[in-house]
Length: 216
Image 1 (tube, rainbow, N blue to C red):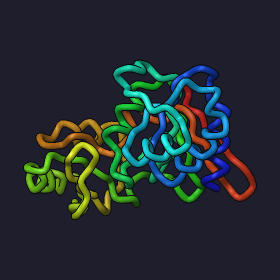
Image 2 (cartoon, helix red, strand yellow):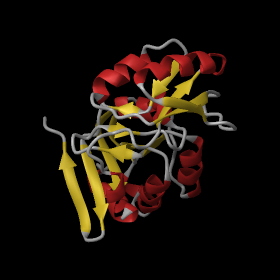
Image 3 (cartoon, rainbow, N blue to C red):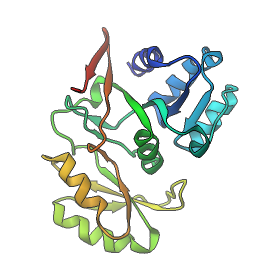
Image 4 (tube, helix red, strand yellow):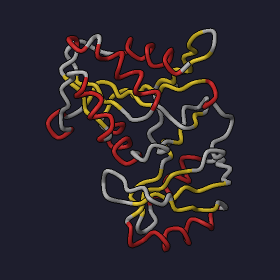
């Protein structure tokens, strides 16, 4: 199901453009598919060191976002997604760079298998990237939102930061919660993609791919 969604995302490429590439197991299928059509694109902007290595292994040029500028399309997965195209991301630890590349892209195409589609976000622990010295401070502040923050021990992001996974949340208003958590001192970013949600959600199912699009 992941591979079906990833292959469907190839239809959103534009010849000669630079494509934004996310991180994770579903995106790995997209990168492998991208290798077969790499002659069609100018290169890729990667959201993580892991994706950069996989792109380079396929001979796909990896560009710096500062050089590439605005991107035509960004393709990435999600840990949870709603039919309103709000997402939880960051299970792979690349949430900050993923959010940056998404913000730099005209169209965000999210690829998931049907198990990731939910009615309400929050069953998957919500990742929050934090400055290391502020980890305990931020954890204390996060408890007032009703969840239980747990330090993802042994994990350091590509930016040199720590991750708190907030468990047992039921997120009724993703846009408001994203704004509130982002304003906490010590937070780099939160893995809610609601203020800038996906534009297209490709859901892989046993019988094919279901396409959900955000209203203009």
